[in-house]
Image 1 (cartoon, rainbow, N blue to C red):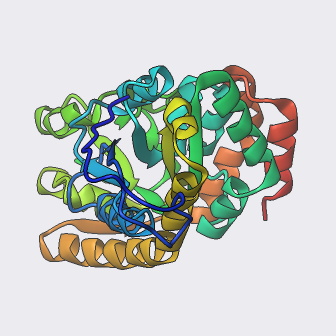
Image 2 (tube, rainbow, N blue to C red):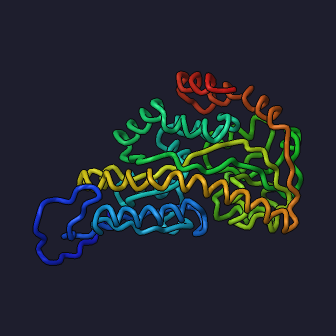
Image 3 (cartoon, rainbow, N blue to C red):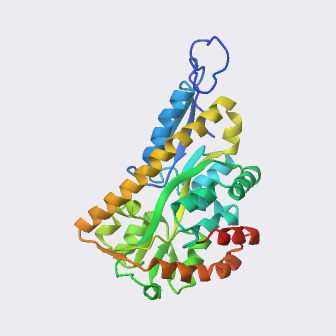
Length: 330
């Protein structure tokens, strides 16, 4: 972990409590990495969180925000947090499946009914147990996990309108087993590929499609080479604000509280902006020549949910977790 101290005049008084700060003796710098581009709402929200944390701690905590994988890709940053060499990461909690397979389950297509359902699961008791286990066994603490990422859709160089169109479709997927198996089962050619290579992959025909929330697709300019947007709303994730457990334990109670309070305060604004950005992105893509297709979501949902048990067995999710999630389907 990286701490920078600026020793000033001797401070007088008691320790700082949340929201009431005296002049700080030292400044602790927390580097926060994201894989999202600078204009993405997660980056903007993290910058707002940094301002709030500085305010609540009287400048004791300074969060430095590094978007666009400047500190490495998601798995690199998560491994760094486990080792204590990277302080914080803001991104989809699905990435945590690299350490605990059950976290991958949220990468399942049509697992959740909608974004509210996804958020409720992430904030629920079962997920809290997973998060506690992660902190204890792998040294990564999830401070909050209720920043919506928005529904994921396809963008492709050839139209994708029915499930049959997935047959043989060369689709870029994250290097996560849940995503790979989920697309392999209905016959797609799932192609694990780093985000940094996806634009070129589409351009060169290595892949024909990728999928993300519409604002993310637009921000990365995939629409300039893939002219078909299919609104499947096939997955809902949540962004987590995560910190190295070693770093977290080194902070004062007031500093820890400030991080959590700031992240929670930002959440409602963040989630409103996600919806606005998605609407704006889809309108801009239409204006720029993208064909927008809608699917029979009930039919897609039925087919993907029918393979959930097979997927779960292949990936290795906890049986009790699988049954709990299925019980929430409508």
